[in-house]
Amino acid sequence: MTVPDRRPERTDLGPVARAWVAQMGWRSINLHTHISLVNRYVYVEVPKAGCGTMKATLGGLEAARNNPGMVGRFQEAPHNRLAATPFVRPFQLPDAMLEEVLTSSNYRRFTVVREPAARALSGFLEKVGQGLKQSEPIVDALRERTGRDIPPDEVTLEQFLDVISEIPSRKQDPHWRRQADHIGLGIVDYDAVVHLEDLDASWDLIGDLTRTPELKGEFFCRNSTGARTRMADYYSAELLARVRDIYARDYAELGYDVPALDAP
Image 1 (cartoon, helix red, strand yellow):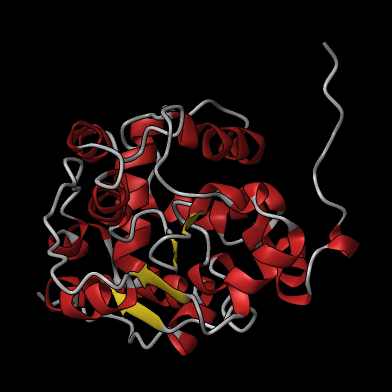
Image 2: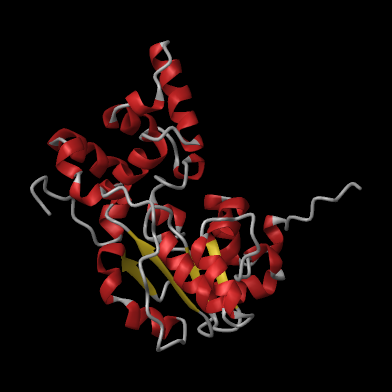
């Protein structure tokens, strides 16, 4: 059976959805936007910024409305996009309702972000250092630059930063994409932009945003790279300056300072 292309025309979307789609693409917005119509909130996921913890916690909250068994299912595999999700996705909503979700005071919109240098290092260590599929474009780009094949686990952080510095946000892998662009900052009106570094102290806020005062977060992430404690092992002052340039908007608009190498 041939299925027609039913993606919405950009001109049919409301102003906010249309501007965000123009910036980041329909696919990215659907992958990373998690909507609760019951609890009336929108969580926009930033990969490598506590997204496993957030999806496990919020996914469990949403799944509990169905049955207890589903809670464990979503908490055990929060990144499994092939499994049924307890959230509503943007593509499932009529255009006018999607615009309401993204703009109305009836919904709370929030996200979790991370200090850019630690986040970039975490993405590098996990995705490139372990040779996962996200490393393939990096390896391909280095092959074009150097004329030789460099195994993923031999790619240096400097080479990685050289490659990603030249790629616009929309074409970046979301694990190291510029966060302010990814979340549509300045397009979507957020009620809260939580720093991952403050997440442990932010569950009362998230409980309020999700209309679940008793919500308590647990750290479900099983793939921590420990990037925050390994900064001095990989960064020099020159590479931190490079990160500052690559993620200039993140530093300027998300409330972060470039870390010092002797910072904990």
